[in-house]
Length: 156
Image 1 (cartoon, helix red, strand yellow):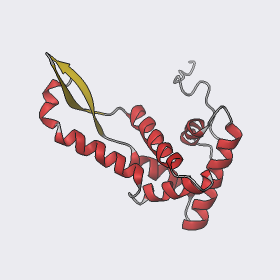
Image 2: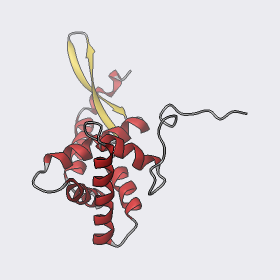
Image 3: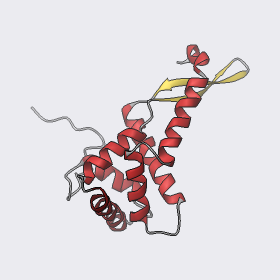
Image 4: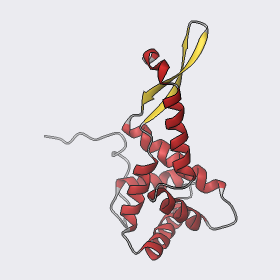
């Protein structure tokens, strides 16, 4: 029986160093202007820094940091009659991962003055400890959803 492929699996190979699809997806998101070698260099440099500073498996820290950043619930705008309401909805697994990547990279790129690998390593370690700007973004999203839970009946 032929194996069914997920649309993202079809063209994406696991990264060569860790053999992880998650790392491969993150490197693709980290890539800027099609320069994958620079993205790999920055990511693997960050993982080396994490390993030196924590003496733990950097892949576990990366996976834990992404898991800590992933949102569970978010708000979406819903127009009912003439009013627009912020409606809290659960986040799908794939969207949660995409948001985690986006928030982590947004925060990392906002810091300036240091190499990307250092900034990424710092933010990964902070997210693993449930600290940092990416975690703050997640908490703000959850607070907004909690504040608007009276609009949950408008969910579609």
